Image 1 (cartoon, helix red, strand yellow):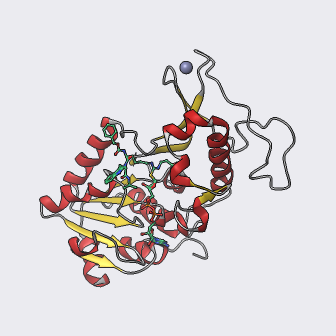
Image 2 (cartoon, rainbow, N blue to C red):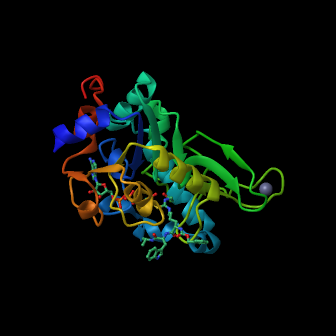
Amino acid sequence: MIERARALVQQSRAIVAITGAGISAESGVPTFRGEGGLFRGRDGRELATPEAFAEDPGLVWSFYRWRRRVVARCEPNAAHLALAEAEDAGRCEVTVITQNVDGLHHRAGSRWIVALHGDLFVIRCSGCGRERHDPDPDWPPLEGRASADPDDPEGSVILPRCERCDALERPGVVWFGESLGNRVLEDAWAATKRANVVLVVGTSAVVQPAASIYRVARARGTTVIEVNPESTPISEDVDISLRGTAGAILPDLLGARRSEGG
Ligand code: BV8
Ligand code: ZN
């Protein structure tokens, strides 16, 4: 199967990789599920909602501050690097359509990125919508003292306000119940239509509409290859479903040099 998948990828002129939390698992980024998905005992999916932010913006900002700090310490892994190197080599067009908000594809060097769900390091005003990039993981600032755990001090954050209109600033991500920007979905569909091969990497294929983007490729007879240690709801529906980790399989498929010591 891997030989067939590698041949299809190597002869492709345009590759799309649809990625989820699993591609960042080997970098140590906690996914929403399992033990990593809890913050102060709350399920991450509960906190990633407009309702939670309206009810307790300080708790939601503490959650995102914690994730910014954890992610800032993580490094792109061999899978991110393989995609960036394939794009850089110019042998074929590589577009990354990611559900992740950890910024690791960008830090790996990928440039054609469709960030479906936004970015942890983008801050948006909940009033006027002004967006800015803020790489400082120690932001928003804390009031009072930090506790023993510097990643999650008990002290609450100072709620950030927009310089322009004084409304509360929020994380520049798409929460559950919020619609994705039309622009990102159109970009995702356009890239997927152009692709000869679509890789679906490290996603449980549950969250919509991200989980259905690959269908655009299926409808056109484009080859879809899944990479995941576990089977998912789309495993039966794709051409090739490779059981394994992204860090092991992507460098093999994309013919990239292994990262130093990777
Ligand atoms: C919308 C940003 C409506 C925030 C995120 C019922 C049915 C269908 C849909 C719904 C429904 N009820 C509600 C909905 C809609 C909802 C949804 O899909 N809910 C799900 C839970 C059923 N969707 C939405 O709300 C979306 N908006 O629908 O709007 C609308 C329409 C019009 C007008 C107004 C409104 C918005 C969804 C976006 C939410 N934001 N992130 C933040 O991060 O803080 S979602 C977030 O969770 C991620 O971005 C990602 O999308 C998702 C996590 O999923 P995965 O990435 O797949 O990660 P997961 O942990 O689940 O799986 C990891 C996988 O990796 C596993 O398969 C594992 O085996 C594998 N793996 C592990 N290790 C490795 C590996 N793979 C490879 N290598 C390894 N080493
Ligand atoms: Zn504003």
